[in-house]
Length: 187
Image (tube, rainbow, N blue to C red; front, top):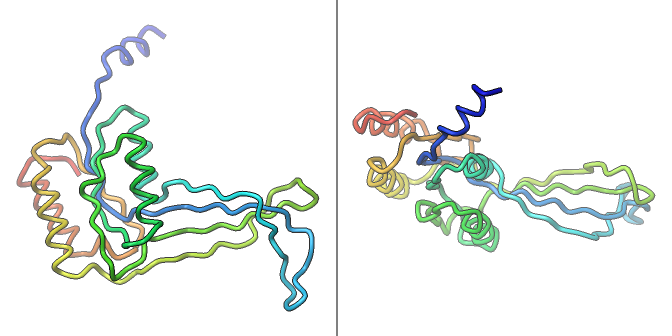
């Protein structure tokens, strides 16, 4: 036990860049007690909507939970979901200046529909994914890499989170590996 206490006492904060696919998880819940008259599907009478950061955003929040100073690098759409995601990260103390806005793509949203039968037994009924898997354009990828390189001297480690949503292309990942080696940073 004393060894654990000694380790905890010597724990220090660290600085990390999280690079990758930032997403917003939406959980839409309600009662599912009847079928639709126009199709054999349940009707969800919505009673609540909750949003949580997902994908690379969730990783960033977990690192904040370990007292890390987190700077986020990725892409969101020019939409309400992107603004909401950035606001969630800002509220938790993440630096979101590296999350670029691409008006040509939507913010990735994972929307889960959760029904309660007889007001108990929550069950995920369906998930709707709003996303683009198209690779980032070369201009946006270059802007992202330039912003990452400007921040590398101020961090301890880089975390890459790829969920195949177009941010972490082969070229971007290879460039990131080269930059981390050049600046002596773990990836």
